[in-house]
Length: 218
Ligand SMILES: [Mg+2]
Ligand SMILES: [Zn+2]
Image 1 (cartoon, rainbow, N blue to C red):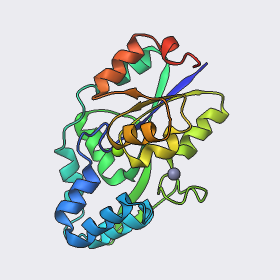
Image 2 (cartoon, protein in one colour):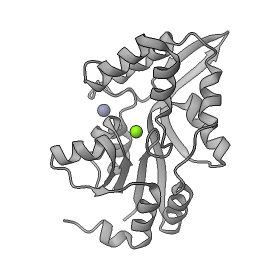
Image 3 (cartoon, rainbow, N blue to C red):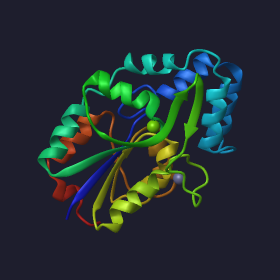
Image 4 (cartoon, rainbow, N blue to C red):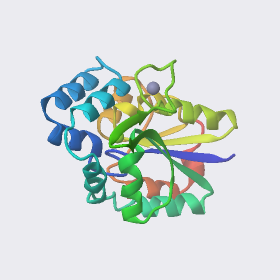
């Protein structure tokens, strides 16, 4: 059976949550308030992103430059390598923006498939797009569960790797979940089985030591 590994970006591949850190640091109180409300579940990601971007008064290209300076989890390359060896496709799913995710991967020299929200600059104006918005969810801007479901429909097994609240929808539909941070708390609170990890070399090790045992039906 074919397997797809979906992986979150902010806080997982990039140990720094780039959008939250950038906007809460450089876009002032309005952006911080939006993030607080999002964390409390009062607003969805579309509204949060719109408010963060509109609260930011500086040059938005600074966000892309900021992303290029952030470190990558040192195990990411190993995870790609082990996945490739075992015939596992890797897809990055993010409720953040391609605008900083692409320069980050470019800087670190990785080419990966990414589904995310989009920010484009046209005539000096920032335009946000949410091509993967899912009405049925209503909370996420890019509901990761849609991408997971699309692969499940093709009969594939799903491994999911993430650290946060934007991973909740997808994690509950995956066959195997690797969790840290808030996602771990969510899995514990909701009875979702998971493998704990600290960094991506832990996940790579588990894939190397055998997909069969990882995907054994419980
Ligand atoms: Mg995250
Ligand atoms: Zn969702």
